[in-house]
Length: 110
Length: 121
Image (cartoon, rainbow over all chains, first blue to last red; front, side, top):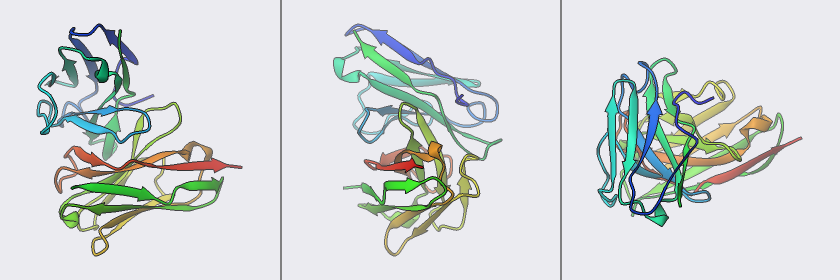
């Protein structure tokens, strides 16, 4: 059971917008910024969003993040087949004195 | 080019030990905190441990506290993870990850390709 809660799966058709939620608590998302990672099995995870809403250079503006209280979300617009991957949220947790990840959301582009 | 390369993975016995290394290049190593993150087969990402840029402060996940030790050699631009008293549930791909800054709270902006640790009886 992960400290941060994400839906296990999400799906949408090309061109649509999909939103992935991440629910935490006051000790993690409620107190710290949220980061989002993309992970294809067998490859290195990649940072998509940091500090709730910021995109590293090279990440398309189709990816956007938001946060409200103890929850956050990742939106992917103009969905493309290459967006099929596992997506993880993460935040520092003050109670655990460490990083916590969501369980991951497997995105399927239909 | 910023690069992280893990090594040292392999087969270990339950109750045994294994040491991992992460060689860094392309950035000023001692300016950044670095972490180990693992992914067990069929599971999600799990943070394991983090060490400050100077190597003076460390944190561990409860699942490895007292068994794993993180360290770094800033002259060799290398981070280490010594894993003792290995359990079956420690079997995973272990990734090293660089923080965006020296802060504990900054995102991991670069990851290595991972090294596989297998634990058997």
